[in-house]
Amino acid sequence: MKRILTFAILIASTFTAFSQSLNYNDLGILFSKDDNYGTARFEAMSGAFGALGGDISAFGINPAGSAVAKKSMASITLNNRNTEYLANYYGNTTNSQDDFFNISQAGGILSFDTAYNSEWNRFALSFNYRIKKDFDGLYTAVGNSDRLFYNEHVADTKTVKTQFDRSIEQYTSSRTEGQSSVFNLGFSAVHQNKLFVGASLNFHDLEFYREHLFNEINDDVDGNILDVEEYTETLIQGSGFSLGLGFIYKFNQNIRLGLAYETPTWYQEVLEDYYDELLMKQVENLSIDQDRDVIGPEGYLYKFKSPSRITASGAYVLGKQGLISVDYTYKDYKNTKFSDGNFSQTNSNFANNYRNTHALNIGTEWRFDKMSIRGGYHYEKDPNLLLGGNTNKDNVKGFSAGLGYNFGNMKVDLSYSKFDNNQYYTIYNSNDLNIENNTSRISGTITISL
Image (cartoon, rainbow, N blue to C red; front, side, top):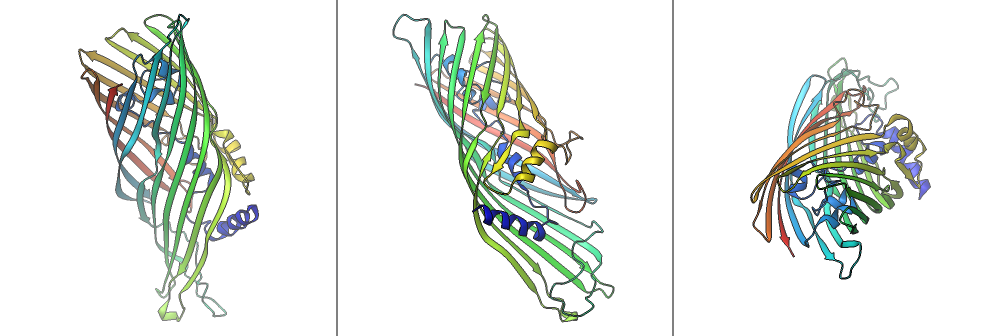
C-alpha cells in the first residue's frame, strides 16, 4: 500500500504540478480546523465557555464544564451557513455563494447530586454530537496570467512541433462537500462547589469530497488554439479519537478560571480515492487529434495526526445579571503529521513552514428577567507562513450576537455569527489566486430540562 501511495504521489506531481490542487499540507490544516459549531447560546458568545460550563457545547472546550449544570438537560440545534466567495485572479473578480443547512448539534447532560455526605457535591455524564467544520463550498476564477504550462500538444506528431506560446485565458473551479464532526462522551464532578474536574473521550469522523477543474487556453502565431483541461476528483474518509482533560476553579461568586487540554486526534485509517484526467482537445486546422491521459481511480490508506489544543479561560460573573468570558487557545500545528506513506516532505513542511496558532474568543451575556442578550468576538491566526501568513489577511476574525428566552422547563436560543478571512493559492506565481470568504451563520436551539 505504501508503494502504491508513493507511486501515485510521484505521478500526480508531474501530472498536476501546475494546477491549484490541494496538497497534503493544505488538507492537514483543513481537517484540523474547528469552526465552533454548538448551541445557539454557545455560538452567540463566540464559544467562550472554557471557564463557564453549564452549556451542553461547553464540555467540548473544557470537559469540566458539565458539572456546572445543576439540572439534567438535552438540546438540539439547527444551523444555516451562507458563504460568499470572491475569487481574485490577475485583476478579475468572480463571485459565488454557497448555503449549508444541517443539524449542527445534539446532546445532553445528566446531572446527579451525590446521595451521601461527601465533599464531592455533584457529578455529571455528558454526550454531544456536533459539526466541527463543514466543507461545502464552491468558487470559480478566470483571468490571464500571461504565463503557461503547455506550449505543445502531446499528440502533435510533426518533427518540429507547433508552439502554442501565447497565453489567452485560464479558468479554475473548485467544488467541495462533506464535513468533520465529533461525538463527545464526558464525565465531570465538583468538589466543595469550587473545583470542577472532567475528562472526555472524543470520536471524530471525516468525509471530504473535492471536484476540481483547471482549463488553460493558448494559441500559436496563426491563431490556432491549444485547449487543455484537467479534471480531478478526491474523496477522503476517516475516523479518529482524542482525549480531553480540564478543570474550572471558582475563586468566589464572581471569578472563575479554567484550563483544558485536548490530545491530538489520531486518525488510524484514512481512505483516499483519487481520479485525475488530463485532456488536450483537438486542433482541427493542424490535424492534431484529441489526447486524454488518466490516473486512477486509485485508492490508498494512510494515518493522520491533527494538532493538540490547550485552552486557558477566565470569566467574571455578576450573579444572575450577566457575565463576561474570555478563552485563549493554543494549537501546535507544527506537530501535524501524516504517516504510512511517502510524507517526509509534507511533515517537514509542517515543522518548518507552518506555525503554532493562537485564538481569542470573548463572550458576554446579560439577563433581563427571562430574556438574555448575548454577544461575542473571535480571532484566530492562520498557521500557513508561506501563503499569506505574513499579511494576517488569512486570519479568521468575526463577531456574534444572540437572544435567548427561558420558558421554565424549555429554553429557546437564537444566534447570528459573521466572520471573514482570505485564502491564498498558487497556480503560476505565489498567492496569485486569492479567495475572500465572507461567512454568516444563523443557529436556533431548543433546550429541555430533564
